[in-house]
Length: 179
Image 1: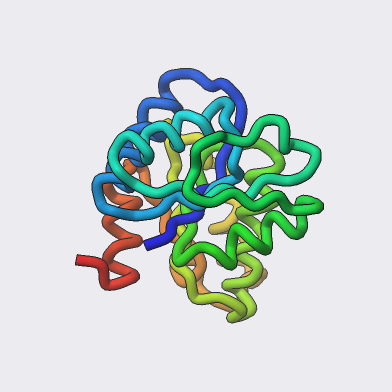
Image 2: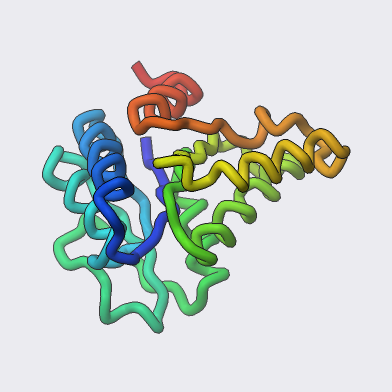
């Protein structure tokens, strides 16, 4: 399975890097491919290292203004002209999506895939990995949107909330019929 991971390129505390590394190792050992922003810095590097060390493939999609930070030695690297093209390519190359901790860029990517799902434009499974309760507030906001009629589909149709890496990958494999 080709799994797109939206996540931060920042250097983060161990409470975030440890679960990200664990997820990356599970992904690689499972024979899956990481599709990610292509950067060789911060949490993006941690995840790419873990996948590669565990035998998984790496497919990066960077953007022109960040091309100096791309990871060398990947299986495939594409440089998009802008962030909109990057998001489109990341989603095109993936069978499933995992949203890890991140800033505004990650939030932008997350809401785009959920909007596509809401309108039936994709059926790819989406997992929000809520490491260390990072997305508790967002979960609450999504639930309020559902409760107050802002979502035309049940929230559970749009995203699966996982608290641990093993649960995130298990959900994706089950959703995609991977043994």
